[in-house]
Image (cartoon, rainbow over all chains, first blue to last red; front, side, top):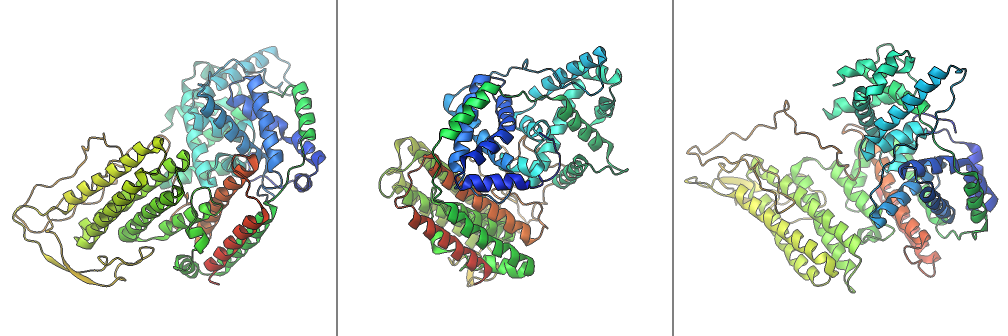
Length: 217
Length: 403
């Protein structure tokens, strides 16, 4: 799934066609939408439930069932279907924790192996990349729920500002403010995270830019 | 401080969009880089292929859902599109006048209660009016009117026996919020003008609300009774604050302060200062407290912030200066969102309308979803209330457009 940080998703005419067909009752059209969005919805739910695959699968099933049942009735203006599905997923996860009075047992060890970087055969670079991914993952875990959620929606799942705003039930202005505060909070944590500064010094270009964050106000 | 943060957030958003101006703030640039790092280094695990196939098969076996509400949204889309197009053509002042007209709320929306399709529209319109209200007096009167409306809704919700707990508690909370906001606004206006009509407004309000809550207490579900009692306690605390603020002091003689434009109880929806009939009043002397401390929402809060001035031999006192801008109140960790989150006070009316419509749609959508999910019973037959709802919304939008 292509990541984007654009303000709004460009409208995909194929998705529009599929949604119109699904709203008219085409199950195969809905199944194709399912194929397109399962990864995003499942990924979102899985991270929200701390890596519990069984629970994630149950909830994702509920989400798509609800989406199908609501197909003919929901308000469709050609906007981001992913945002609509994520909203349903978000509410379903929240309902689950509300009703079960279940305290989330945050597991930080469900970090997967990072995606292989192109042209990186050097095992040391791979090892460093894995360590950095773990450190970033630890840093994300320390954020407040609200901050972590906006960073995950925007930068892990690649949703646009508008789509994220829809999923969170906020305005785009409020979402931009939230992402700003969340990144500031993450930067504070990253600055104090023992592994990352050394890794940055080891020459991975991206994080060098983070060193000036030490003076973040 | 909010404006500076807003500008930083906007610039960050532009950087994330791929803009790269040479003079970009280095801190913001670093944050954008951090975002990129998160994106490229975090992996989203794939779903289990067997699970994916199983769920797909399950979905294909689900019956095709009925779509009773499709037409509702079509009508709403067309009507609100007209509203947006007209906004672009109209002047901001002209549209604002149309929105503020007392004919602007269709009867059906006015009587909506929580759970009705049009309830979102009703609350959206209330928020819209709050955003365009100018000054503490108009603001305060609107808030009190909204608190009264919440009580009306609660009465309606329990007219035929105990209603649902969730909406009851939500509506009580909204009522309390509006009562406090309204009382504080009017008391702020009072300390500026010494207009006794304002404190009378608040006192009359609390008396009427308390009577209504007494009746309500007998009808709500048992679990809501403590909340009703708490709301009544809040009204009492409002009365206490009114008395504190309005107290005459020491040897001061009350001064006649001319006419009060607000003492008469006219339609509280929108009244600009000076519009109501004039009534001659004597105000309190001017040595009451110079600022109005917030009215505590919870009974256990010890009010350490009360600003009191000792009785003084001078008849007039200089009013307290506004809050020192160098020491703003500490911002909460997660700021509360107002019901409509406007971009900025100076944005055009079009943005206000967009937000109001968005709130309306969300409210209506939530009600529709609840029916579709099976949480609420589907009205039988379905077509008629849906068509009626669509027509009501269409009429409302026509009203807003001025006919």
